[in-house]
Image (cartoon, rainbow, N blue to C red; front, side):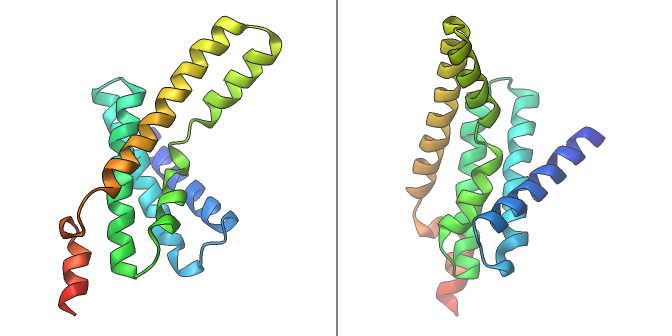
Length: 149
């Protein structure tokens, strides 16, 4: 349980760090961090019950795009501010590194296996984001609240 807490905290802080690097306005740092931490929490939760990184990544990216769009409507800011920072936790950086390492040391079989897994995860992220973008604004609470004011 403590491990889960520290991973979510690391997701929060890592997302905020990426927001600083990406030059996001300061007023959005906490929102970006919360969205990234929620996405990582959903990923970890899904992995606990369904041990498939591709499926967990897809579900987490759906949650991330939903939260990013919700924050976008609520804070009247572009979706990309929250989405790009939030998706940071799900990007398979270690997998890309391992693929490149094995490719260059000549272990083609292992590089191919890792490369296919990384490609599946990248496609899961892209499909999750695309599916989330296709949702009508009527699905978002902040959109309705914005229309009433």
